[in-house]
Image (cartoon, rainbow, N blue to C red):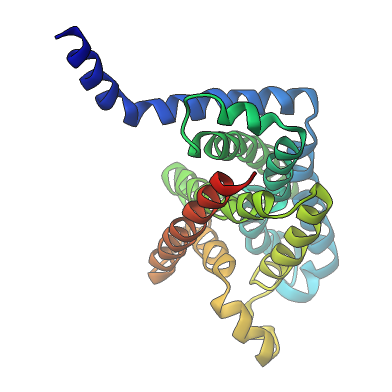
Amino acid sequence: MTTHTHSVDSRTGRPLRWLRHSLILARRSLAKTSRNPGAIVNGVVTPALFLVLFLYVFGGAVAGSTDNYVQYLFPGIIVMGAGLAGLVSTGTNINIDLKNGVTDRFRSLPISRLAPLLGSVLADIVRYLIAVAILFLLGTILGFRSHGGVTTTLAAIGLAVLFGFCVSWITVLIGVMVKSAEAVLAFSFLTFLPLQLGTSLAAPTTSLPGWLQSWVHVNPVTAVMDTCRALLNGTPPGDRLTTTLIWCAAIFLLFCPMAVWTYGRRE
C-alpha cells in the first residue's frame, strides 16, 4: 500500500519537479552572473549606445528634433534590451557547460532534460528586466515619456521580455548544436544582426528602400517594436499585437522542442 501511494505521489509530483529543478538551475546561472555580470552589462551597454548614437545623429533628420525622435526610438531600444542584445550569452553559457562537462553531471541526476536549458533562459529573464529598468532610467534622462499609463507600460515591457524569452531558444539551439563558444558567437551574430537592424528601430519603414521594406515587414522584431511603440506612446496597437503574439508562439514551439531534443542527443 505504501509503495503504491509513493508511486502515485511521484507521478503527480512530476509536473512540478521540472519547474523546481529549472528554478534551482536558474539561481545557479544568476549566481554566476553576480560574479561575472558581463551579460547584464552587454544587455545595457549595446542598446544604450544605439540610443545615444541614433538619437543625436538621426534625431533632427528623422523627426525634426531629439525630443520627438526619442519617443519613436526608445521603444525599439527596450526590445533590444529585453533580450536581443544579451541573447548570445544564453547559448554561450550552455555551450561552455557542455564543453566543461557540467551537463554530464546534470545528466546523471534525476532531472528533466528541459531543466538545464529552461533554467538558463529563466535567469536571462531576470537579466532582461534589470537591463530594461536601467534603460528606462537612461531614456527618462534623455527625455522619453510614456504616454500610455502604467498598465500599458508594463504590458510593453512584458511583451518585449516575452519575445526575448522565446527568441532565446534560438541561441539555446545554437549553443547545443555547435562545438565551441566562438562558433556560438559567430552564428548568433549572423542570425541576430539582420533581425535587430533590419527593423523599424531607427526610422519609419516608409522611408526605407523597397527591397529593405520587404524584409522589415516580415521581420518579427519589427512587429514587436511597433507594438511596444504603440503601447508606450498611448496609441492602439491594432493587429500588430496579435502578430507579435503569433510570432512568439511560433518561435517558441519550433525552437524549444528542437533545442531540448538536440540537447538530449548531445554526447
